[in-house]
Length: 258
Image 1 (tube, rainbow, N blue to C red):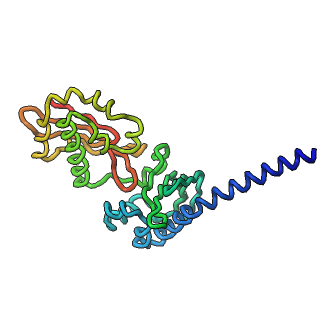
Image 2: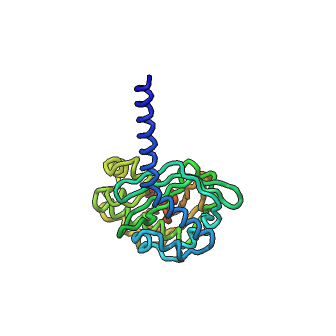
């Protein structure tokens, strides 16, 4: 019995040591996350911006970053709870819940990248299942931004058709969708368009025209519908986007020519 207790005690000590190691390894990213939301809550946006990875800073201006923080009410965080944490090599992930000053909650995932021996924030995701809880934190982008989104997605789509490969489109879509669909499956879906070769690139000579008011669903999906006034046939499109990190990313595309 004493031997058994010693073995159990040894296993318990090992488990406690393992848990301690995990928390020690992840303490740097949880500390950075706390510093980040402390800064945003105090409206110290410049300080928070400096915590982003080089890729994010090169892709998003400080002003766009400030807009993202305000639009998603990340300047109102009063409490943070982390349910899952992991670090592997130079990458880390935190998943948890943020409580806002109005006592609403939103689930979030943060990704981290170590650069020059310092941890940086490389992405912020609102967890898909809880978009309905944080809908008020999302807002429909301006019409100019919607035009930009559509033109970029349609240009990638048209160039993919010219290449007879959906590799470019696959690289353009959201990470969430990319994990669920392969280039080969996209090729199969859009194969009938390949006879057009580079013909669809003509859309770049036109401005997209929206045919319905843009919608933001309870699940946080942005739906943009419209057409290009090409002749003799028009190009009709329906695009769906979700917010990944600081950007709206394509999660669905439907194109018809008639």
